[in-house]
Length: 118
Image (cartoon, rainbow, N blue to C red; front, top):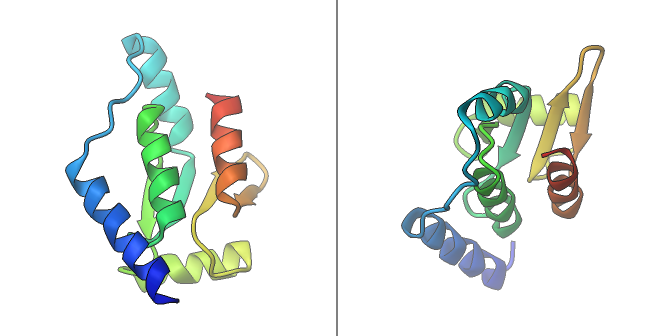
């Protein structure tokens, strides 16, 4: 990873910790339905990846409670990502369906999916 990307990731990580995200306000029954749906999604991310932070903040802005898995801190999450999705790239969103799982790797594809779905 080059120095500029590392510095950008550190700056985004700092901003993510300091600046709170204001989520969309919904009716309680609608929010509880979204909570159930969003718990079937797993976001594999890294705290030092600008795209991961962007996707994480977008999920928070939409008021979704996706399962967040930091692949840098927990090796088991990294192994899940490699075995299930096939590539050790972050951000990655795993959407658990009834029959199988769908893996989205592109940050733009993840944001587009979330905007369309929620």
